[in-house]
Image 1 (cartoon, rainbow, N blue to C red):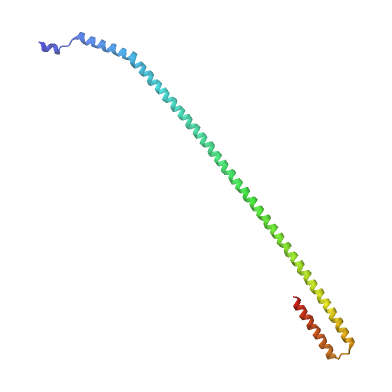
Image 2: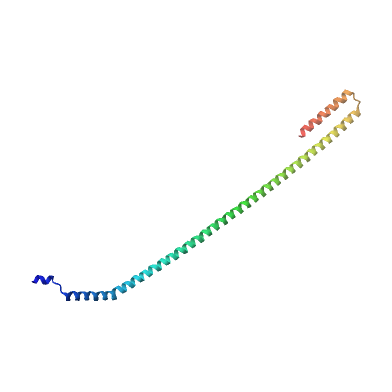
Length: 171
């Protein structure tokens, strides 16, 4: 019979075990489950706060990125405008320099033409004086002696040749 006692069900022991289990559950619930639940809720709140802070930081970063992208676009446009103005100013300066150089070159050409005209006039005046001198000498010789028609022609030819030689020598 002893073997039956081991297998037998003792109702009081089951009841006491259940009460012990219930008391242990209530103690654990009061002292362990409540604080653990509070700690998990606190951690969840901290995580939610961190996620909200991260989302806010991400939104600020996106706003800052948009702001700096707009600034960059504005800076690029301003740089393009500055380059455009600089190019226009350089073109205007270049045109003015070319215009001044052309005016200076035209002035030099006009001065050279004026000087050439003066030299030509001096040469003509010299030739006129020479012709007058030669004519005077010829007249003097003609008056000093009588010429035949052939002598007269040879004298005029020699004077003309002398004038031509002097004219070619002056050039």
